[in-house]
Image (cartoon, rainbow, N blue to C red; front, side, top):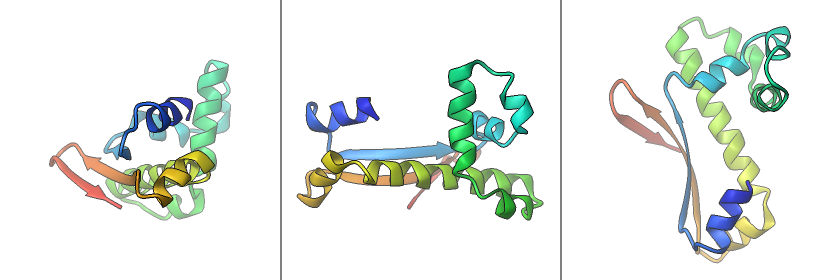
Length: 117
């Protein structure tokens, strides 16, 4: 978050785009059992647990198609990260004055298509 705050307030960026992608290894790793995550280095385990906490595990387990489950998990994570940015007062002050746009997206590597939301 600190690097994005710096970009917004000092570099005067106009757009923050949180872009997830097909076959994201971090999101896939976050869906592993907690016992597996505990074996990772502390900071990595915490980052993966933070991703996992934002995922709707019940919803994901009902998706039997692996590509659909992957996309749903990644887009959910993107939406969570966008929401996290929207809780930052300084960033939202820039949004309210039309100095900044925040958006999320999903990049489908296999086709080159990016869906924005």
